[in-house]
Length: 66
Image 1 (cartoon, rainbow, N blue to C red):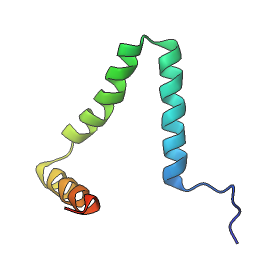
Image 2: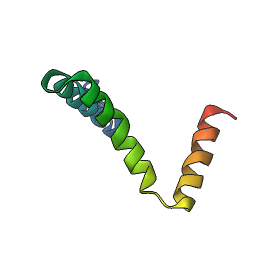
Image 3: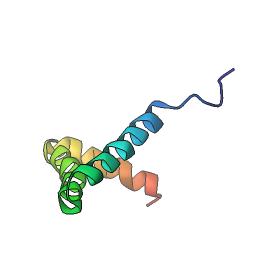
Image 4: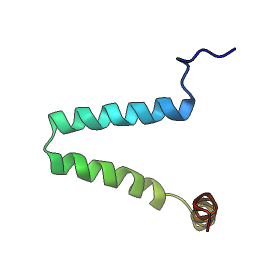
């Protein structure tokens, strides 16, 4: 049986992202942290080829129930 304290891999990644964001907000001006928070996912999306972008949009629409 799993313990209640076990976290899924996605939850650990999310918690790490929140912690990194808070550290960035403390050490950097808010607008630099904001640019990093928006820029990293945008850069990751731009590195995908067109087939991967199509697949990502299709999956996202399905999850939204469109």
